[in-house]
Image 1 (tube, rainbow, N blue to C red):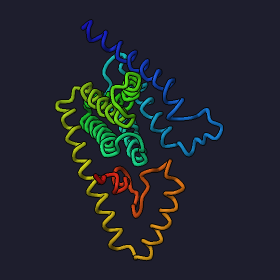
Image 2 (cartoon, rainbow, N blue to C red):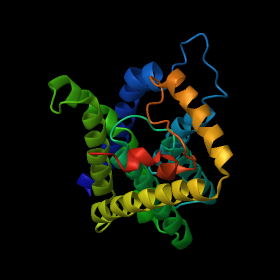
Image 3 (cartoon, rainbow, N blue to C red):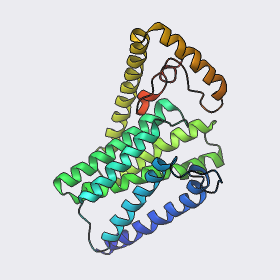
Image 4 (cartoon, one colour):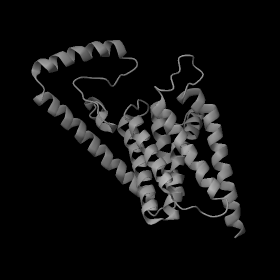
Length: 260
Protein backbone atom coordinates (compact mmCIF):
# COMPACT_ATOMS: atom_id res chain seq x y z
CA UNK A 1 0.00 0.00 0.00
CA UNK A 2 2.79 2.42 0.91
CA UNK A 3 4.75 1.48 -2.22
CA UNK A 4 1.68 2.05 -4.41
CA UNK A 5 1.10 5.46 -2.80
CA UNK A 6 4.75 6.43 -3.29
CA UNK A 7 4.58 5.37 -6.95
CA UNK A 8 1.41 7.42 -7.43
CA UNK A 9 3.16 10.51 -6.05
CA UNK A 10 6.48 9.95 -7.82
CA UNK A 11 5.07 9.37 -11.31
CA UNK A 12 3.64 12.89 -11.85
CA UNK A 13 6.81 14.43 -10.38
CA UNK A 14 9.01 12.44 -12.78
CA UNK A 15 6.74 13.13 -15.76
CA UNK A 16 6.35 16.88 -15.31
CA UNK A 17 9.98 17.53 -14.37
CA UNK A 18 11.14 15.60 -17.44
CA UNK A 19 8.71 17.39 -19.72
CA UNK A 20 9.67 20.77 -18.28
CA UNK A 21 13.36 20.16 -19.01
CA UNK A 22 12.62 19.00 -22.55
CA UNK A 23 10.35 21.96 -23.29
CA UNK A 24 12.76 24.56 -21.88
CA UNK A 25 15.98 23.22 -23.37
CA UNK A 26 14.72 21.72 -26.64
CA UNK A 27 11.16 22.39 -27.80
CA UNK A 28 11.01 26.15 -27.39
CA UNK A 29 14.57 26.60 -28.64
CA UNK A 30 14.58 24.29 -31.66
CA UNK A 31 11.32 22.54 -32.56
CA UNK A 32 9.11 25.58 -32.09
CA UNK A 33 11.19 28.74 -32.72
CA UNK A 34 8.79 31.19 -31.08
CA UNK A 35 11.58 33.70 -30.45
CA UNK A 36 12.11 34.36 -34.14
CA UNK A 37 10.68 37.60 -35.48
CA UNK A 38 9.17 35.86 -38.50
CA UNK A 39 7.46 33.17 -36.39
CA UNK A 40 3.95 32.47 -37.71
CA UNK A 41 1.72 30.55 -35.31
CA UNK A 42 -0.75 29.59 -38.06
CA UNK A 43 1.99 27.97 -40.15
CA UNK A 44 3.00 25.90 -37.12
CA UNK A 45 -0.58 25.18 -36.00
CA UNK A 46 -0.27 21.40 -36.39
CA UNK A 47 2.99 21.36 -34.45
CA UNK A 48 1.55 23.59 -31.71
CA UNK A 49 -1.45 21.25 -31.35
CA UNK A 50 0.87 18.24 -31.39
CA UNK A 51 2.77 19.70 -28.43
CA UNK A 52 -0.17 21.17 -26.50
CA UNK A 53 -2.61 18.25 -26.68
CA UNK A 54 -0.50 15.64 -24.82
CA UNK A 55 0.39 18.21 -22.17
CA UNK A 56 -3.33 18.81 -21.61
CA UNK A 57 -3.89 15.04 -21.47
CA UNK A 58 -1.14 14.58 -18.89
CA UNK A 59 -2.45 17.37 -16.66
CA UNK A 60 -5.99 16.01 -16.91
CA UNK A 61 -4.95 12.45 -16.11
CA UNK A 62 -2.59 13.15 -13.21
CA UNK A 63 -4.91 15.75 -11.65
CA UNK A 64 -7.70 13.18 -11.54
CA UNK A 65 -5.33 10.39 -10.50
CA UNK A 66 -4.46 12.00 -7.15
CA UNK A 67 -7.21 10.02 -5.39
CA UNK A 68 -7.84 7.05 -7.67
CA UNK A 69 -7.11 5.86 -11.18
CA UNK A 70 -9.42 7.82 -13.51
CA UNK A 71 -11.75 6.37 -16.10
CA UNK A 72 -11.57 7.47 -19.76
CA UNK A 73 -14.04 10.04 -21.05
CA UNK A 74 -15.13 11.11 -24.53
CA UNK A 75 -12.94 14.18 -24.15
CA UNK A 76 -9.90 11.99 -23.41
CA UNK A 77 -10.59 9.90 -26.51
CA UNK A 78 -11.01 13.01 -28.68
CA UNK A 79 -7.73 14.49 -27.48
CA UNK A 80 -5.87 11.23 -28.07
CA UNK A 81 -7.22 10.83 -31.60
CA UNK A 82 -6.41 14.47 -32.36
CA UNK A 83 -2.84 13.97 -31.14
CA UNK A 84 -2.42 10.82 -33.23
CA UNK A 85 -3.74 12.72 -36.26
CA UNK A 86 -1.21 15.53 -35.77
CA UNK A 87 1.57 12.95 -35.40
CA UNK A 88 0.63 11.26 -38.68
CA UNK A 89 0.33 14.62 -40.40
CA UNK A 90 3.73 15.82 -39.18
CA UNK A 91 5.49 12.57 -40.02
CA UNK A 92 4.60 13.04 -43.69
CA UNK A 93 7.05 15.96 -43.70
CA UNK A 94 9.68 14.33 -41.50
CA UNK A 95 13.17 14.93 -42.85
CA UNK A 96 15.29 13.81 -39.87
CA UNK A 97 16.78 10.38 -39.34
CA UNK A 98 16.56 7.33 -41.55
CA UNK A 99 13.16 7.87 -43.18
CA UNK A 100 12.65 4.18 -43.93
CA UNK A 101 12.63 3.48 -40.16
CA UNK A 102 11.84 6.85 -38.54
CA UNK A 103 8.53 7.39 -40.33
CA UNK A 104 7.10 3.90 -39.65
CA UNK A 105 8.27 4.29 -36.04
CA UNK A 106 6.14 7.42 -35.54
CA UNK A 107 3.24 5.96 -37.51
CA UNK A 108 3.24 2.77 -35.44
CA UNK A 109 3.42 4.46 -32.04
CA UNK A 110 0.65 6.91 -33.00
CA UNK A 111 -1.62 4.12 -34.24
CA UNK A 112 -0.97 1.96 -31.17
CA UNK A 113 -1.76 4.86 -28.86
CA UNK A 114 -5.03 5.59 -30.67
CA UNK A 115 -5.92 1.89 -30.47
CA UNK A 116 -5.27 1.73 -26.72
CA UNK A 117 -7.40 4.82 -26.18
CA UNK A 118 -10.26 3.41 -28.27
CA UNK A 119 -10.17 0.11 -26.35
CA UNK A 120 -10.06 1.94 -23.03
CA UNK A 121 -13.02 4.17 -23.89
CA UNK A 122 -15.12 1.39 -25.47
CA UNK A 123 -14.66 -0.89 -22.46
CA UNK A 124 -14.44 1.81 -19.81
CA UNK A 125 -11.10 0.24 -18.93
CA UNK A 126 -8.84 2.31 -16.66
CA UNK A 127 -5.80 0.15 -17.45
CA UNK A 128 -5.89 0.83 -21.19
CA UNK A 129 -6.57 4.52 -20.59
CA UNK A 130 -3.48 4.75 -18.38
CA UNK A 131 -1.52 2.84 -21.03
CA UNK A 132 -2.53 5.35 -23.72
CA UNK A 133 -1.29 8.17 -21.47
CA UNK A 134 2.06 6.49 -20.80
CA UNK A 135 2.67 6.03 -24.52
CA UNK A 136 2.95 9.83 -24.71
CA UNK A 137 6.38 9.48 -23.09
CA UNK A 138 7.55 7.91 -26.33
CA UNK A 139 7.40 11.38 -27.89
CA UNK A 140 9.55 12.97 -25.14
CA UNK A 141 12.15 10.36 -24.21
CA UNK A 142 13.85 10.65 -27.64
CA UNK A 143 14.98 14.20 -26.83
CA UNK A 144 16.79 12.92 -23.74
CA UNK A 145 18.35 10.01 -25.62
CA UNK A 146 19.39 12.21 -28.55
CA UNK A 147 21.16 14.59 -26.18
CA UNK A 148 22.95 11.74 -24.39
CA UNK A 149 23.96 9.91 -27.57
CA UNK A 150 25.15 13.12 -29.22
CA UNK A 151 27.19 14.12 -26.17
CA UNK A 152 28.97 10.79 -25.90
CA UNK A 153 29.07 10.18 -29.69
CA UNK A 154 27.61 6.69 -29.36
CA UNK A 155 26.65 6.51 -33.04
CA UNK A 156 28.56 7.99 -36.00
CA UNK A 157 25.84 10.15 -37.60
CA UNK A 158 23.04 12.37 -36.36
CA UNK A 159 20.55 10.48 -38.52
CA UNK A 160 21.50 7.20 -36.82
CA UNK A 161 21.23 8.83 -33.38
CA UNK A 162 17.78 10.25 -34.17
CA UNK A 163 16.46 6.94 -35.51
CA UNK A 164 17.87 4.82 -32.68
CA UNK A 165 16.66 7.26 -30.01
CA UNK A 166 13.09 7.26 -31.30
CA UNK A 167 12.95 3.49 -31.61
CA UNK A 168 14.40 2.93 -28.12
CA UNK A 169 12.10 5.54 -26.58
CA UNK A 170 9.05 3.92 -28.15
CA UNK A 171 10.02 0.51 -26.77
CA UNK A 172 10.56 1.99 -23.28
CA UNK A 173 7.23 3.83 -23.29
CA UNK A 174 5.37 0.71 -24.43
CA UNK A 175 7.10 -1.31 -21.71
CA UNK A 176 5.85 1.25 -19.17
CA UNK A 177 2.26 0.65 -20.28
CA UNK A 178 2.48 -2.96 -18.96
CA UNK A 179 0.39 -4.08 -21.94
CA UNK A 180 1.13 -7.73 -22.69
CA UNK A 181 3.38 -8.03 -25.75
CA UNK A 182 3.14 -4.26 -26.34
CA UNK A 183 6.74 -3.86 -27.57
CA UNK A 184 6.40 -7.01 -29.70
CA UNK A 185 3.28 -5.66 -31.41
CA UNK A 186 5.09 -2.38 -32.00
CA UNK A 187 7.99 -4.08 -33.79
CA UNK A 188 5.58 -6.13 -35.92
CA UNK A 189 3.60 -3.00 -36.79
CA UNK A 190 6.78 -1.21 -37.84
CA UNK A 191 7.55 -4.06 -40.24
CA UNK A 192 4.03 -3.93 -41.68
CA UNK A 193 4.23 -0.16 -42.07
CA UNK A 194 7.57 -0.38 -43.88
CA UNK A 195 6.13 -2.95 -46.31
CA UNK A 196 2.89 -0.98 -46.81
CA UNK A 197 4.71 2.32 -47.29
CA UNK A 198 6.99 0.87 -49.96
CA UNK A 199 4.11 -0.83 -51.74
CA UNK A 200 1.96 2.31 -51.79
CA UNK A 201 4.88 4.49 -52.91
CA UNK A 202 5.74 2.07 -55.73
CA UNK A 203 2.09 1.71 -56.78
CA UNK A 204 1.50 5.46 -56.87
CA UNK A 205 4.72 6.02 -58.77
CA UNK A 206 3.78 3.30 -61.30
CA UNK A 207 0.25 4.68 -61.72
CA UNK A 208 1.60 8.16 -62.24
CA UNK A 209 3.99 7.04 -64.98
CA UNK A 210 1.41 4.81 -66.70
CA UNK A 211 -1.71 6.97 -66.74
CA UNK A 212 -0.67 10.61 -66.61
CA UNK A 213 -0.33 12.02 -70.17
CA UNK A 214 3.26 12.06 -71.35
CA UNK A 215 3.37 15.78 -71.96
CA UNK A 216 2.16 16.30 -68.39
CA UNK A 217 4.94 14.04 -67.12
CA UNK A 218 7.51 15.97 -69.15
CA UNK A 219 6.15 19.26 -67.81
CA UNK A 220 6.23 17.86 -64.26
CA UNK A 221 9.77 16.56 -64.65
CA UNK A 222 11.00 19.89 -66.01
CA UNK A 223 9.24 21.82 -63.25
CA UNK A 224 10.48 19.51 -60.51
CA UNK A 225 14.02 19.61 -61.86
CA UNK A 226 13.95 23.37 -61.53
CA UNK A 227 12.67 23.06 -57.97
CA UNK A 228 15.36 20.48 -57.19
CA UNK A 229 18.04 22.95 -58.18
CA UNK A 230 16.42 25.69 -56.09
CA UNK A 231 15.65 23.59 -53.00
CA UNK A 232 18.27 20.85 -53.05
CA UNK A 233 19.62 21.90 -49.65
CA UNK A 234 16.25 22.09 -47.91
CA UNK A 235 14.47 19.13 -49.50
CA UNK A 236 16.97 16.53 -50.73
CA UNK A 237 14.23 13.93 -51.03
CA UNK A 238 12.25 15.93 -53.62
CA UNK A 239 12.26 14.10 -56.91
CA UNK A 240 9.98 13.60 -59.87
CA UNK A 241 7.62 12.17 -60.75
CA UNK A 242 6.27 11.69 -57.24
CA UNK A 243 2.90 12.25 -55.58
CA UNK A 244 2.89 13.13 -51.88
CA UNK A 245 0.08 11.67 -49.79
CA UNK A 246 -0.07 11.15 -46.01
CA UNK A 247 2.59 9.19 -44.13
CA UNK A 248 5.41 7.24 -45.72
CA UNK A 249 3.33 6.91 -48.88
CA UNK A 250 4.27 10.56 -49.19
CA UNK A 251 7.96 9.70 -49.20
CA UNK A 252 9.61 9.73 -52.57
CA UNK A 253 9.99 6.42 -54.32
CA UNK A 254 13.75 6.80 -54.37
CA UNK A 255 13.90 7.09 -50.55
CA UNK A 256 11.94 3.92 -49.96
CA UNK A 257 13.91 2.07 -52.63
CA UNK A 258 17.46 3.41 -52.41
CA UNK A 259 19.88 2.51 -55.14
CA UNK A 260 22.95 0.52 -54.03
